[in-house]
Image (spheres, rainbow, N blue to C red):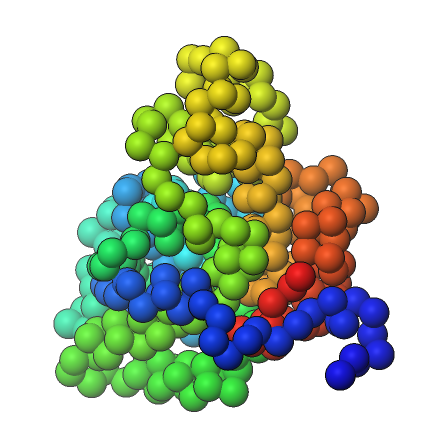
Length: 332
């Protein structure tokens, strides 16, 4: 039955027997979290986490703050937000831009964690509580899954349509944060697994619709490097020439080898990655379409909207309105 909305009528229910690449991807991996510390911070405060090849996350239990990652736009975080840095980017966590920042190692040296791995630091202002840690993906497809993620993935659990069951889990996190019960760190790690899995699931819905979950490894080091550059720097104004220069190839050689390895041109792949990331942002974070356009390399909202509708058959706004049903819906 048609809904009466032309854009929503372009969305169809998945056949119950259809394959579910998102479910298959998540079933093939296991999220394994490690909680480094529960931070109780009072303004002004700030700390820097150095870059490392380890996926990192921060869950805001109370208050608000800013995340500033190297080379990326600042991200405002509020209570209930989870932010994932899948590539382990170096970054700063701060109450407000301009506050003094200490390296995390130095901070912990000067303010040792207590027996419950709690860090207390800062001034006398508003309080922010963060659960900070890292995670690994065990299983058959971790590299393919991580390859779909942007440098920063933010899950706003309330606006991502998961609040009916995330809220009670978040309440457990806050309850543990209020106490110093033995074993709290292990409990935090288990609860973090839930948030991380939900964030991956929500984002990967958009990635699957862009065809990014079906990609096979290219087994060509320079082509894999081009794919990595596109994924990690999708907002950069790439051209075939600039991509070729990054890997020491001519334009014609890059185009030929990229198509042989992936079945598509580098610029087509760039468009798919940008639109897949845009779809992911629409379903996870409370970002304006303008902000999403900037993050994914589009000059303005009109450019993103035109490309998005051409790819998905639906506008970004309509896609966002339908996001509560996205686990059961497929855009034509």
